Every structure is written in structure tokens, then in C-alpha cells.
Length: 143
Ligand SMILES: Nc1ncnc2c1ncn2[C@@H]1O[C@H](COP(=O)(O)OP(=O)(O)OP(=O)(O)O)[C@@H](O)[C@H]1O
Ligand SMILES: [Mg+2]
Image 1 (cartoon, rainbow, N blue to C red):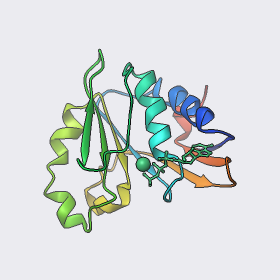
Image 2: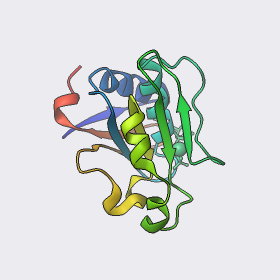
Image 3: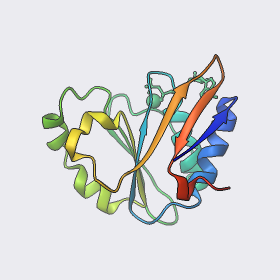
């Protein structure tokens, strides 16, 4: 695990883009952090780097958004409104994980033990108005 500091939303997207360039196929990326930490901005940057040119927004009304890319779909899952791991288990996310070029999950702790063991874990901490500390898995943290 390595910690990187971001000073702006744009820098968070750039850090995510560098991270995404090293992602293995069909990986699951758990993006945790409190409300407004920058999880959605991070996923925007990653999705762009993986080839999705359109706009990424937080999936508020649907739990799962799908973004097509030349290398297969990226899935963006937001479990904020999920109350329990039991409810999460009913979502059939295993198929999503298998089908995705990559699947990014906001509020991954809501999945409980159903978060895959090999999920890559990104954590964002608010460290000031525009400062964020981003923990990335070490093998993927290098530029
Ligand atoms: N360095 C930074 N990186 C990312 N976002 C930042 C940064 N500095 C300020 N912000 C602001 O923090 C907010 C982050 O919003 P974002 O929707 O990405 O958070 P989130 O973690 O997805 O929140 P939620 O839990 O509500 O889904 C935005 O308003 C953004 O402008
Ligand atoms: Mg969000």
C-alpha cells in the first residue's frame, strides 16, 4: 500500500488514470472513503484511462452503471443505499465482476464478506478542503 496526496479533483482523476493503466483483466476495485471523499472523481479518471470518453456520474437511481470501452465494459457500482450484505448478495454482482473489464465499487464495505478476496483496495481520506490522501495497492502505485 502506498499513499499519494491529491490537491484537486483533476489530480485525483490523474492519479486514478495512472492506477488504471496497470489493472489486470476482470478486476474488482473497491473504492472506499467517506461522503464527498472523491470516490466518483477517482472512478471518472480510471474509466477515462480505460477508454470510456463519456461522462461518469454517481449511480444514484441505479446501483450499477455500465461504461463501454474497446476492451469490454467497465462497471461502476454504488452501494450507498444498500442496507445490508444480505441485500448486496441478491444483486448478482458475481456475474458483473466476471463480465467486466474492471468493476469499481463505491461503499464496498456494504458488501461485507461478498467483496471478492482479490479485490484491489483504494481508500480516499479527506485531508483538507481540496486535499485528499489516496491509498493505492503498492504494485499498482508506481507511475
Ligand atoms: N483533491 C480532490 N479530489 C477529489 N475531489 C475533491 C478534491 N478536492 C475537492 N474535491 C471535491 O470533493 C467532492 C468529491 O465528490 P465525489 O462525488 O467524487 O465524492 P464521493 O466520494 O463519490 O462521494 P459520495 O460518497 O457522495 O458518492 C467534489 O465536490 C469535489 O469537487
Ligand atoms: Mg460517489
